[in-house]
Amino acid sequence: MDFYGYINTVQLEDQKITSNEYPFDIPCIRNFKKLDFHPKVTYLIGENGMGKSTLLEAIAVGLGFNAEGGSRNFNFDTQSTHSDLHNYLKFTKGVHRMKDGFFLRGESFYNVASQIDELDSEPMGGPPIVNSYGGKSLHHQSHGESFWALFTHRFGGSGLYILDEPESALSINRQMAMLAQMDNLINKRSQFIIATHSPIVLAYPDATIYQMTPDGIQKVAYKETDTYRLYKGFLDNPDQMISILLNESNT
Image (cartoon, rainbow, N blue to C red; front, side, top):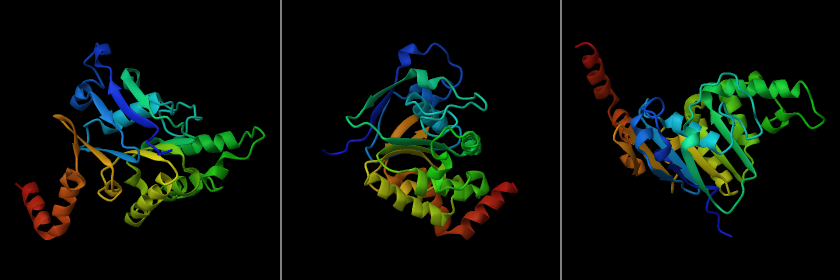
């Protein structure tokens, strides 16, 4: 049977909204109606403040993941700061049931690592949780190494992986290696939803890219994204760009 993804669409049930307060004061959040997810990779991109992380978090929570990250088996709350947007989302799902899944958010990954160490300090008879992450405490690795341990050890395939700016801890080489690892997992019936600022992470072929702007959310091609165009414009002529930027800062 062909694989068509675990999550097909998400829809905002705007008829339930009775407030203009956060997160509904964000134009992209208030005005979007429906997103169709690619069975392989769907990207959310846009400037800071457009609501990428807010929407991604709500998608993850609405699908049963812990708001601070981790698998759907994690249930901890270091500080409850997530919005109630998930209560206004309606999902349509594919015919397959995911066997694995993970929500990665860089800002609270430290808390996930702490939770793993805490749970392993009180063993319940099964193997240590850290074994699924390479057998080494994530706190005993660099930030980038701990992120990479997820991709190479924890993500096993047949799963949904929701990633919020995974490039934040990865070198350029590791970002490129991430694309190869994503492809390995996609070939094992995995689906990704990713918010990113990286033109490398964004480059997976045959993906859906949604660019979030004050005017709403539009589907765009890779080379039409601001992410690609701005990076390319800078790297094609860094001296000129630096000159323009520094002159503007002195005016």
